[in-house]
Length: 180
Image 1 (tube, rainbow, N blue to C red):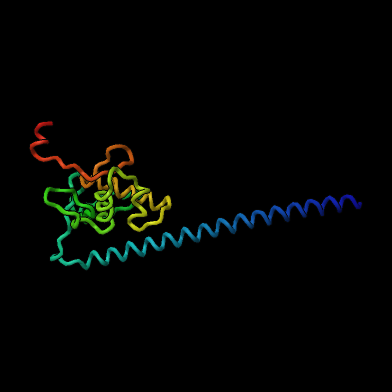
Image 2 (tube, rainbow, N blue to C red):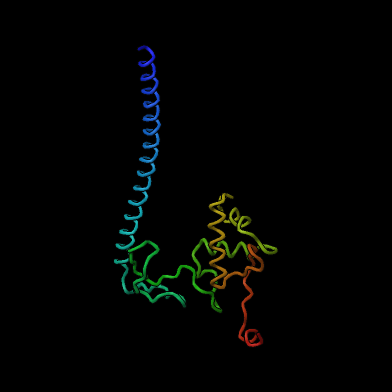
């Protein structure tokens, strides 16, 4: 009978080890769940705070008009999050470049980028710009800078001669546009 008890003890030890393993996995999942809940709560608070701030904006403070292709201010649009609608207030952080516009029309971060590109002797990459505007040369910061560079190209502030190489914009005049 000794071997039967030994077999049961071995099985019990195996079962205990499995339970401990599952408890460890459960603890890790619970920790991830808590982080996700905290992130969701921060987003909710941010959304509510932003709604309060926007509600306090007076009519004397005109919003920058939305660019072509954007929905009109105040129009309801579907969000990337299923079942959620948001109001578009028509604020355009980076305006489309127009003749006579200076870099002072841009937010500070974008203005710094345009100035660095303008001061460069030739085409520059995002990884060269990030440290020059005071950001660490980390992947996330470089990608954020690249995103800003692409937005500046879309809005006419910069040119992208080759993929990833940015230069100051060569704006077309009415005469050069007609010859194209």
